[in-house]
Image 1 (cartoon, rainbow, N blue to C red):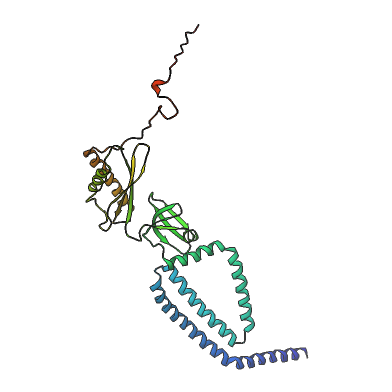
Image 2 (image 1 turned 135 degrees about the vertical axis):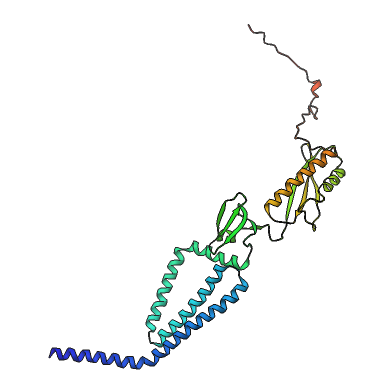
Length: 300
């Protein structure tokens, strides 16, 4: 008797499952077809998106990220639609709730990484700097070697590789020496008070004519700035046709050599720092009028 009841119960369950499967068979077929179409559509959209994003950004990592996000989004929509057709709405709700909780927990746990990541995305679109540019970020100056989604890598002129988080790059001023394709050299020079300033200016500018790597678009300029302790000081400004550091240093060196020769040839003096002691200031006495008293210690 118990065996018959168990047999009937099992038979009833199997028949019920078969009936449910037959009833859901059209939905299963539609879901399978929709899943295949969704995967094909996701690949097609990923390919189209990749072509479009490459026109905006040349960052391969960023391009792969966006195309992958788009692909996963289309696949996710397809899966949720398939589950809904199969009357598995409860499963869909549970998955969405779990994804929300996990996302919130990850956002708190990795907020610094997320900040660098988002900053990297903005940098890739705004392009304030590119690979090969000479830049200064915070206290670091060098050539950009690599721009990732999380950090930017500089090679300093001393040869060190500096990894700067993208948050620091994005939130701080960036001095880009490569955007204009040229750089300016500023030389501070001082000449003696006894020199003819017009002659100094003429000799200085003439000495630099024909200097290699000088920009043809920008003239050499000279401005007197101040009366120093023992010199009249001026600044000499030279524009060079390259942002490269080695050329910048070479122009500085060649300019100093030329100027020294020109000043020596024209007897223009570049004085050493001197200090003058004036004992005849107002309210005092000249040194010659100050009585001198010599005390001799004869000892015992």
